[in-house]
Length: 249
View 1 (cartoon, one colour):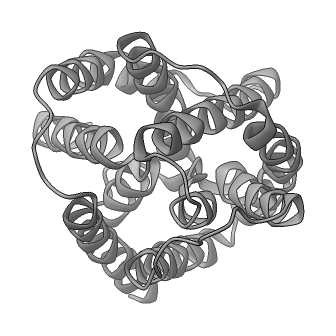
View 2 (cartoon, one colour):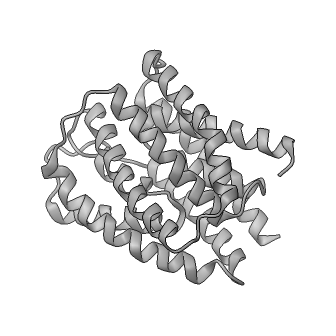
């Protein structure tokens, strides 16, 4: 990789990490989307790097913020999302060969759909939703996590409509993402699909992730959650459209 591309990749890492810490989601979507659209990394490698960096990002965040797990919320989502990760990895393996352009188009459409879904998000429910909704949201989240290390949008859409404190939502999201990431990376490593270049890129990017996470934990910007969501979703739309156009060309 050329130095200019490597430097650009670190900028993408910093941008994605900032979005993750401010909203609780979108790290992998932005990183994989922009890295793929700018042809900085193949999608499968970008997803592996995103998994490694998400792991670091989540651990640093949880160490900086006190957290008391709400297992009544997490348990159904964790169970279904772990199953979804397995299905997503199988689909990724099927599409990563000669069907790579279909994979790029699928990622582009997914990112655009996720951004539109989050932007059109309605107000919060007055009453918590049932367990079935948690299983469905967790399963869809795991499917995207297995495919692209992007577990966020389905579960983000679901939780941000629940009558829950914003900090609790962010922490539940990070726990779910960490669990999905550990499962995905375990399978990828055991099957020999984590190549050395992905590990090297992740190693150089980890200080960037840790630094951005630490700075935003100490000095969080005073912006409404909805404004932050609009900023992140705008980045997602940019990444999704760029990826889709690249695949169509």
